[in-house]
Length: 125
Image 1 (cartoon, rainbow, N blue to C red):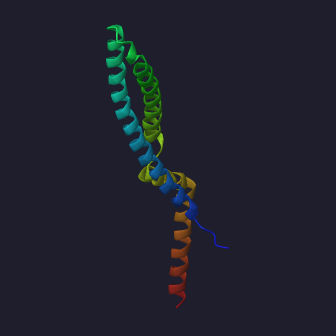
Image 2 (image 1 turned 30 degrees about the vertical axis):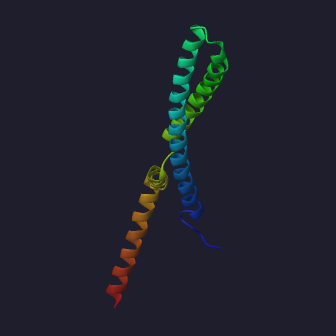
Image 3 (image 1 turned 180 degrees about the vertical axis):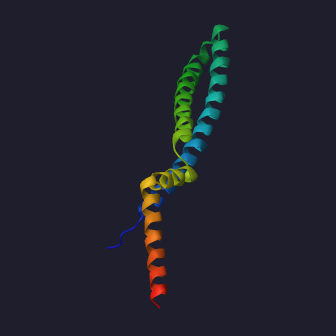
C-alpha cells in the first residue's frame, strides 16, 4: 500500500466540482433567460385578459407558473455556481490546509538534519 501525501481521489473530486460549477452556471443562465421570456408572456397575456380576451387566461397561468419555476431554479443554480469552488480555488484550499507552520517547521528541521549528516560525512572523509 502506498502512503500518498495527497490522496489522488482529491484531484478527481476537485475536477468534479469544477464541472459542477460550470454546469450550474450554464443551466442557471438558460433558466434565467427562459424566466425573462415567460415573464414577458405573463405580462402580455395578463394585459390581454384585462382587456377582455378570456382565451388568454390559460396562457397567462402557464406563463406565470413557468416564470416562477424558471426564476427559482435559475437563481438557485447561479447562486450555487458562485459558491461551488472552482479547480484553482480547491487546489489553493488544499495547499493552505497542508502548508501549516508545523509542517513547515518539520520540513526545515528535516532539511537541517540532512545537511548536518552530509557535512559530518564530508568531514570524516
